[in-house]
Image (cartoon, rainbow, N blue to C red; front, side):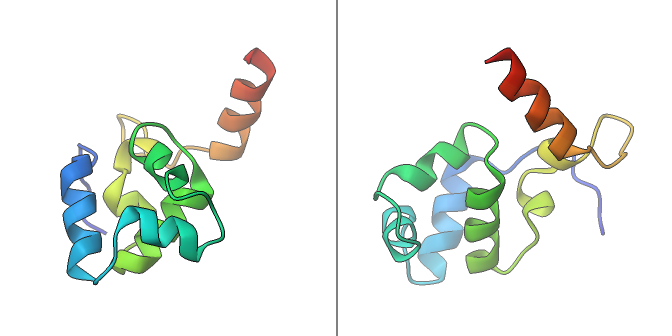
Length: 90
């Protein structure tokens, strides 16, 4: 896998979804979510949403949001530990 240093711009994600013939709102509804729910994935980590979007585009979520999956040294981030840590501090 080619390493990327920056996450995709939200407009690029929306454009990629349009190229597949759908929108973020339609994909949200298709997944049984409120039409605006998946838009949260554009601004903050949410693994379920990342997978829904990435699968529709035909990529792994780490190709769209590398900073959510790899640290500055290119090591895979243990997201489960990170998410548990965020839940405790919330």
